[in-house]
Every structure is written in structure tokens, then in C-alpha cells.
Image (cartoon, rainbow, N blue to C red; front, side, top):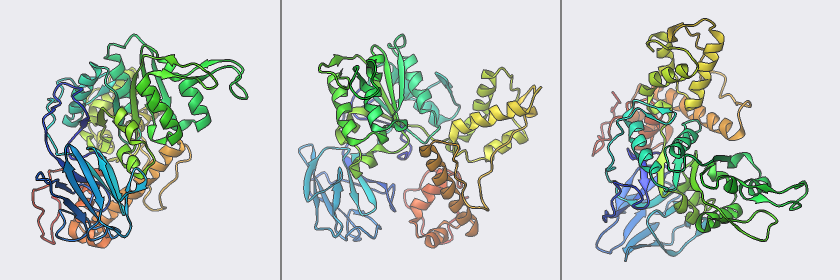
Length: 463
């Protein structure tokens, strides 16, 4: 989900350090066999070609993409996107297009690939935070301190923030910390898990209802927006909100008024909106499952929280903090216990680490330090297939299942080919660059910078 080293995207000049200078745009493959590949859009007004042919500006190896599939041309600050008579067509916001004029940020689906128009990469003009703490979040890693710097700036304004990241990466912790550091700290903080409620209940939960509005509405009830008046509302699992509800949500964000279910009159609300999703909502926009206008309204500042396996250097700090909150002076966090934690892939991220520590404390009465804890870490299933976690909510169980499968497959593939990425890519049918990104995602190879030109040596191995 994370684009290169960028931890935050600012869709306006809402934060200090964001630049309004023209930077030019590029086409980026955000999902598909060529994920991460990019091509700059021509600045002379001519078309940039996308397709499978070698002479295209952005060459895709997706077999469902035509040789010359798509053309993009910049015109007066907009982008004219033209399907070139492709066999499988081009989808924009869920509809087939022949030609359309769009703004930066638009995402298109070509075959199995998603291609986005976005500004060219620019170094974030915010230095990493000198603090190792933001609210209840603690970290030593540079990646998290960069995020802390962005969140510190966001907390000082009323800007809308979209938090993305895998389940358990601390999105609600980040949202609560933003609220607590903001001018609204004395107001309420109301969190709603949009994925845990059916559509009929979600509408009532968000906007409220009047007495008799539906069967069982024995009395009027204020919705989450009304309860958050003067404070902050946090909308978690935003990608699960049905399209019909998205339209109502967009109106609330734009008009700052809500109409309870069954009511005739609207009520003014003064709330700051923070939202979160474990998925890349831009991809959902391209599929037509999420409204583009709502996405841009919510993602004025978009922050991607990395998984724990991508910042293992934070584990000792996190363990120390978890034990401190439970009344135990951890002492020095080192030794076999730390080695076991550092070797684990943590598909459940911070939530899983917290559960491991809580379980160890329960099983280690009288423990005086971290080294005394009896850690029990659930191993990744490797011999009997991938386990289904029925003890988790559906969305979390599905994410854990997919993560376990991907990790098992990649680990076996990498070991079977003795670290030879070219051979592993041929055997798996994956593009070599995409395979390398997946291996880095799961911590199976070093997360070093990609060289400007990738060696063609067939015996290439990650050191």
C-alpha cells in the first residue's frame, strides 16, 4: 500500500511544508503485475501511451492489457484519457470509458492493473519528529518518526485525515492522538466501526433517528455526528460503507448538517472528521466501489501506517511501553525472548504484540523483568495449510488468512530458489520487480533502495 518511501500525501496546501509548486504528473501502476512501475506524462501536450507494446511510454505485462490500450494527454491543468479501442476496455469509477477529462489522482483499471495519475514524487518537506512518542504511540524507527511529524502538523489544524494501513497498525491510536493534540481536545471523540454494522443500522448510528422512524425506534437517539459536536468523529473501516450511504456521508461532510432517520429538519454539526481503512481506497475508487468525490473530501491528508514487520526496530520500545502500562519495569529488553519476537512476522501487527505480552504476563506470575516472561507465540502454519481464525471478526480473519498464504508461498519460493530472485520470478509467473516488492513487504529480503537500473544478471540474489 505504501508508495515508495512516502508516508503522507497532501491533496492541498493544508499543512505547513506542502508545496503548491507545479511538479508535473506521472502514471503509476498502484496494483497489478507491474506494481510500482511509473512513467512521466509528456509536458509538450502530446499523448503518453500505455499498453503491452514495447514502444509504449508505460509498458504493462498484464496479459489482459492491449498492445496500445490507453492514451493520456495534459490539457489546461486537466488530463484527457482516451481508450484506444482496447479489447477489454478501460474502467473509470466502475464505468467503461472511451474518453474522459479528469484531474490528478484519477485511477483507471486496465485488465488486472490499476493505473493512477498522480504528482511526481517529491521529498516530504517535514523533518522526522524529534519525539519518540505521539499520544499513546511510541517508536524509534525513522519511518514512524516521519509519520509523527505529519500527525503533529495535522493535529494543529482542523484538516480531514485519512489513515490507511493493515489491521492492527494503530490507526485508532493515531486518530485519538490527533484529537488529543488538537484544539478540540476538550470535546468528545466518537469512534464508529463502519464495517461492524449493517447498512440499516449504520445510517441510524451515524445520523441518528427520531422516535417511531422504524420498527423498534421507541425513542429518539442522537447519531455519532451529533454526539461528536464540538469534537472529533473517527470513521473506521470506511471502505465497507455502501455507495448509497457514501452519498449521504458526502453531503454531511460538505454541508456540516445531518438529518436523523425519519426527521424533516437538518441539524448543524461542528465536527472534525478522521477516517481509516485497511485498504487502498484509491483502488476501490477505480473499481467503482467508492465515490471519488468522497475519497478526495476525506483524504486531504492521507497517511499510511507501516506494518510492524516493516519496522522491527520498534519492537523493544513497544515491549517496554506495553509492560510499563501494565505495571512491570521491563528491564533491558534483549535475549531469547526478543529474538523470538524479532523473528515473528506479526500478521496481527501491534494488536498481536499486545496480546502476546498480555498472555505472557498471565502465564508468568512473579515475573520481575522481560527476560522472566514465558512468551507463547503462535507459529505460522506451514505444514497443515493456512489456519482460519474463527475467533476474529470476518475482515480481520480474512486479512490474516491472505497474509499467511502470501508469507508461506513467498518464503518457500525464496528458499527453494536459494535467494535467486530471477529464477523465483520465472517459476512463480511474477514480474521480478513485483516479486522483490512482495519479499521486502514480508521482511524476507533487505529493504534497500531499488537501483536506478535493475541488473539483468540471471543469478542476482539479495544479500
